[in-house]
Image (cartoon, rainbow, N blue to C red; front, side, top):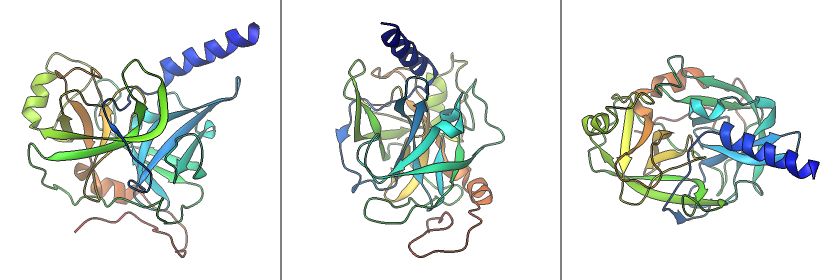
Length: 271
């Protein structure tokens, strides 16, 4: 009975400590369709429980872009990166994290500049299940109403069990001023032109998808940062707008390793 109570306490600790974001209303897909997405897994050593904590996008063999919030309260030695698998907790390749560089202007409350670069201890080889997204050039134009795709791991429904298989959802970008108006009475997030906000009826992100990549074609345009209501249509999902941080990402993403075959050693900016 004591061991059961211990496991329950560990689960409750995870539920309260893990970043709050997960896809609702999406479609099941495979890693071959989205080889750039990675899962950050986290080990709770006492009960020996490993969970999928957050998400990121590969931008080189050595680097991923994700949210700074993903690492709130995390011990890096307990976290790994899983790449090349449709399942967040099995298959593919596991690598250790060398370092996490959060944006210097990141604040948790109100959430702003919520972006980070993760550097791996060992590089990932490029294949049909492991590949990168390009970074957008600075001030990359994205029109209001543009359809954007987000891929991550999540729930079938807001109250349903956590799924381990990959899902995607399409949302539509909205005007920044409209997004600011939606969160005008909130002190949890600060909306600026460094964000992209997107929404679609009955779709969105929820608990566990922090850092989920937003892409247009093969370009990383956003990293999920904040949500207010998983299934409500009153609040859009909020993403860090990658093109506002392209130069910073390039500055901090230094692999420091000699070029190797089948490796992409630095992020590539889309033409």
